[in-house]
Length: 113
View 1 (cartoon, one colour):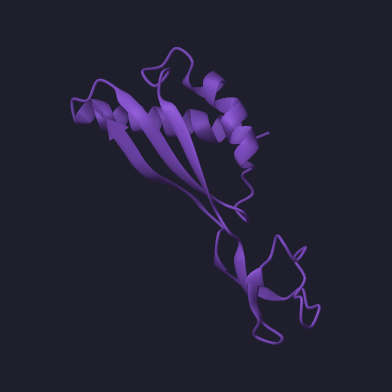
View 2 (view 1 turned 90 degrees about the vertical axis):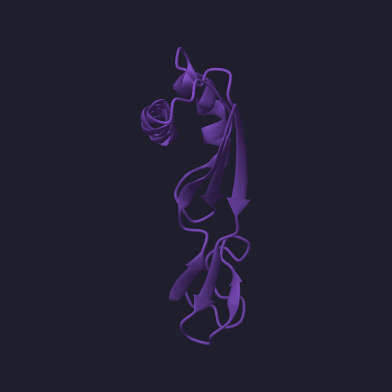
């Protein structure tokens, strides 16, 4: 489960940034997680208490927004959600696809006091 390591790095980065801005508290952290990012949202939620423990973000609410894994089949051109189609094109069965969205994880918003 690499989600804890990802969150630890994120907490340290945010801590550095908000201290530079003279912010003392972060109320909420909003993260967008793509279905094709390799990050499991449930594991992020489970890891959050450990990642934020004894940091200035210990009381920060974590909000996750899951971004659908949208792909385009290189064989027939169909655009579809890869996760719901078991990574196969529902029209031609091809596994050769181009990722259009949902393959990253970003900090969407940091809500401070």
